[in-house]
Length: 221
Image (cartoon, rainbow, N blue to C red; front, side):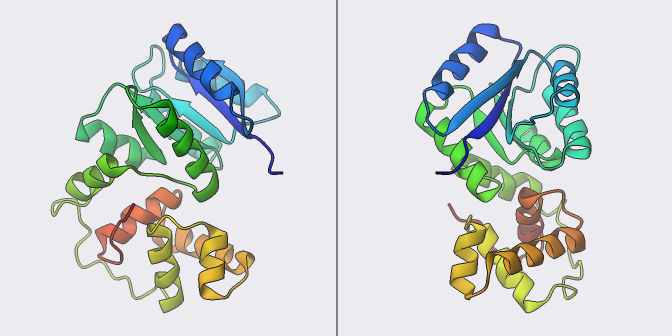
């Protein structure tokens, strides 16, 4: 049996945060290890605690240190921790901004419990998860003509790396890619790490945006 997914909840609305915590603690494979009311409190807890969360579920608008600024800090200090934005803001600018600073999923607070749990499990398994609305925002906003890197050389990527990048964009896991290509998961991890270095991407979500910007793949859900 796989170890439980360790979650930290960050939201200044106590009643909402407690409700999410109660919901998630009912799941056998999810463990809420701590809560915080703002980004500053979150960073302090991350620095103090030996056991770190696998995933942080982060609100955007919070006092002292908001979710966007907290995400930027976490991406530098704790790059292995994945961040899911859970907010009441559903405008394209907020979605695009959070993805660009490092969030690997974006949910609106009126989402269903089923979708929240699905997103957590998909992020734990694949490294990112974008629903239909977020995919459309990536294509319309992050990958608009004015933001495209246009003509950027991509021939420094090997055919195998491009193939793996395309499979990542299909939201396949490392194990699924390995099985598809008849390679070991360790080999796939090596290629993925090379992709991150070569494209200067912060995480798997960044690889997806890079691939779309450079017409190397089409996002599917």
